[in-house]
Image (cartoon, rainbow, N blue to C red; front, top):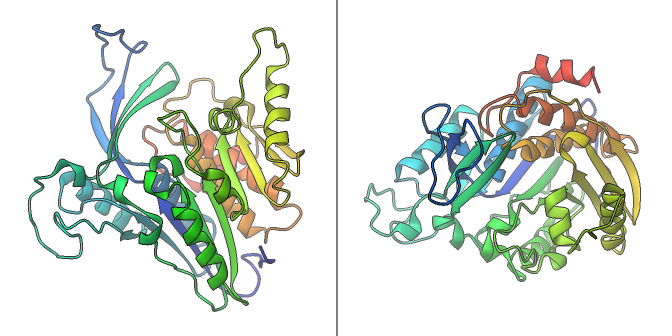
Length: 368
């Protein structure tokens, strides 16, 4: 990536282009542990449906951070995803994007019905339904049951270029790779090569990726080819273990250090790739060229409410501050600190796409 300018420097449009998943999240908050098969559990409150998905969550937090921390800087947040705008879940996501000033670019190209036809046709084929996900929150953790719907048809060829050869800084963030099966095995890689070739000076381009958990538990899908084309990989500890095929030894007493060493060694051959691993209450660690380049502690919450989307809020906070610092030598540390502050506030809010206030984020920054 070529060098960028600080947000306080020469005016240039900053464009965040989020390419990924969006879901209608159906939240179930349990009063105890998950029920056993055939059992029952009490809900703390009524079931509620909210906007979610890694791509939409990240776009929402980015739009909020830009509005609260850099309101005068020319910027935009675009979200390329696939929904069905004619069903209730699709309309929920459209309304959310409008309220949060996100430019939603629906890339659904199915003909049943086509999102470009402007029809109000009722859905008769469930495979074109808007993606939705049951989120079960219990004992400071969460589990997911996901229906991909029309998102399963989102392919690399459907991605709009969105690269402007003008005084601009473009960030392309791929969010939820393993939720996008038609991005696998070269489809996304081919599109990213095209985007790299189309980015010419004075346009700066940064490409980042969040893989998300893989429901197949294979953590493959040709992702290694994609790693050659991105600048930053942001992933959770669970995702890091899955992608690197880490298996903890039963007698290992240095689990965290062994994981870190294993992940660092796995990505060492990608010498220019910055790998940021989120570690929950332990904060985050950044790796590059097989070495640790920064460790960041976070502010621990004694009684977190909902961990859903914490990783997405971290990604938004990290990318916002990383770019704001002009990707200089201090950008990694500042980005990770800011990301941890945003994520620490996220776990105190029900739902994954409800941004924290500027004052809450600033108060947390003072503690870390």
